[in-house]
Length: 120
Image 1 (tube, rainbow, N blue to C red):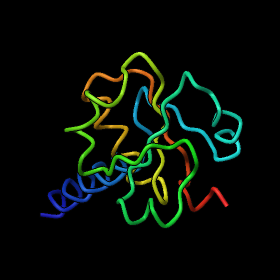
Image 2 (tube, one colour; image 1 turned 180 degrees about the horizontal axis):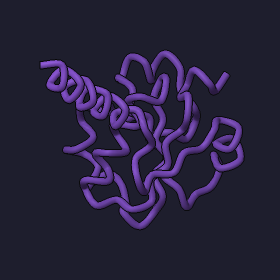
Image 3 (cartoon, one colour; image 1 turned 135 degrees about the vertical axis):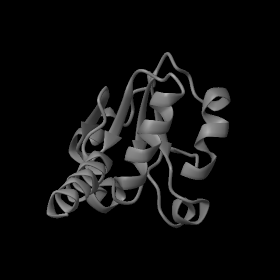
C-alpha cells in the first residue's frame, strides 16, 4: 500500500513540475531584455490578459489577445514567420499561451518571465 502512495505522489509531483517548467522550444526573456526588443518591427507582441486588465495598463506595441481566445484567433491574426513575444500579469498565462501557440505550429515563441508584475 505504501508503494502505491509513493507512485501517486511521484505522478502528482511530475504533473505539477511539468506545469511550471519551461516549455521545450520556447524562449524566456526578462522584462529588461524585453525593453531592448520592444521596437523591433520583425516581432509580434501579444498580451494574453483579459481585456479589462489590458485596458487598465499595458505596454505600448502589445496586441491584446486574451488567453481564452488565443487558439481561435492566433492563426488569422499572427504570422508563423515572425517571433511571438507573449506576456501576461505574472508569467503563468503567457506560459500556457506559449503551449497553445506551439501546438498551433508557431516555432519562434518567447515568454516574458514575471509578466507585467516585473515590468515596473
